[in-house]
Length: 381
Image (cartoon, rainbow, N blue to C red; front, top):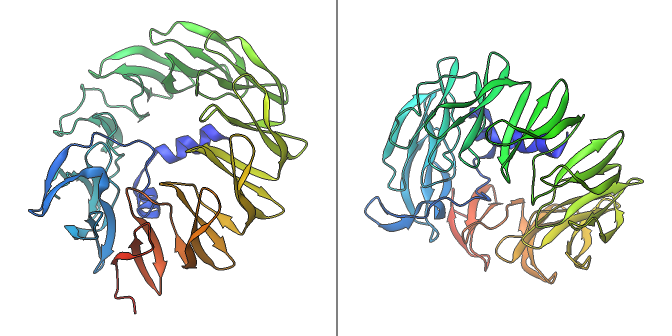
C-alpha cells in the first residue's frame, strides 16, 4: 500500500475505525483552541481533553486527570476543530468541550470536523454539515473527501468533481478519481493515469503517470516506468526518476529506497541520509524512526542516530520523548536517547497535550512526563 492510500484510509474515519483508534489521542492538526466551560469545573481547550474508558462507557479527562465529561458514550473520539464525534447506541453525534451535544446523535457514519465542516451519511448518501447541524448546500453525493484549500472532491455516479464551501459544484463530476488540493493543484485520474488540475478545472500537469501522490511541500512524487521521481507545481521533473520506492516530502525530507535499503533526500534530490536502513518512517518533529536487522531507533535530519537502533519497537517523538519497547515492556526516551521513564508498561503511546496513554497492571491509564499516573481505569496497586 502506498502512502496516499494509507492517508486516505486514515482520513475515512467511519465507525469501525473509530472503535479501533479511540485511544490514539494524537492529531497532527490542532483545531481552534477556544476556551469552553467544562461541566462547571473550569474553562479548558477542547483539544486538551483525553478520551477515558470507565464503567463500560467513554468520557473525557483534562490534563490533570479530572473526569470533566462523564462517561456515557459507547464510542468517543478525540476533539478536533473544537468538537468530538461520539456514538450512543448505533447513532453518531458531536459534542463540545462541556459535553453538551452540538449535534444530537442521528447519523450512522461520520468524520471529524475539519475547518468547520464534517462529512456524514444521510441514508445511503453523504452530505457535508456545519457545526450548527445545517447541511452545506443541497447536494447529496456517493462519496467525498475533506475540504482542502476551500474545495472538496465529491463523487456522483462514479465520477469525481469538486464543490466549494457554499456546497455549489465548481467542477462537474468527470474524473475517474479526485483527491485533495494542495498548492492550488488537485490530483485527478483520467483514462487510468494521474495528472493535476487547478481549482477552475484547468489541466496544469497532463495525466502522464500510472502512480502519483498529492503535492507535499511543493513536490509531488510520480512513477515513470518502474522508478519514482518528483515534479514541482509546474509539472517539471525536478528530481529525476531513480528510486525503487519513494514517499512524499514531510518536513522537507523524503524517504526513498534503492536496492532494498532506505535513505532520505532533501527537496533538491540530494542524498542527506545514506541508504542503510531496512525500514524507515517519515520525519516528525525533526526525528524519524529507522530500523536495521529488526531493531528500531531514531535519526535526526543530519543522519545522526540520536536514539540507538537497539529497541524492539518505537513510536514517534512528541513533547521531547518517545515510547520505546525493551523486550515486552515500554518506557520513554528523550531526544538524546536517555531513558527518562523506565520500561514497565505493557502498552504505551506518544505524549499528547501533556499526557500519554499506557497499559499498566491490567488497567488503562494516563501518565504525565515524569511517569506519574494522573488517571487510571482501575486502581493500580
